[in-house]
Length: 153
Image 1 (spheres, rainbow, N blue to C red):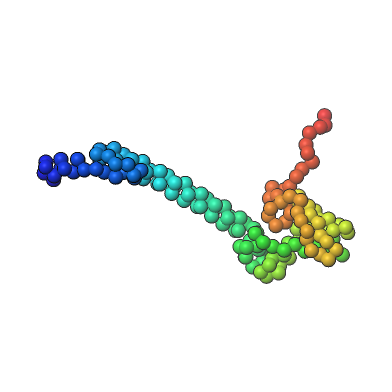
Image 2: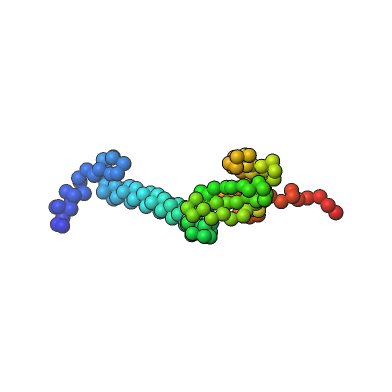
């Protein structure tokens, strides 16, 4: 680029990303760099969030998959079933129907899951709710509640 062309290039009006006019291309390029940095940071944050969320979901699916058929959906959606005669409560795979003993049910329909959660079965056998727990068996993955602690000598 010769001197005359460069001088004309420097005198031109520049439209920066913030839509302001300037005759200073260096200032405009600084604004452009800041805009690129913000977009890059946003993409990095978004990518990390999606990647971390996907990794957690994959780990949950693998850890809580059905032991009989290997269904990865078992940890997210499985049925609960009670046998009032024997007093057993089961988690049932929706794909293959495999039943796993996971709790004890009382004659009134209240169930205590092995992992520490509790819930209620109706007399017709339908499950109406959990008291704590998010992993399909009515209790926390860490073994549940505890005695409240404290006291004693």
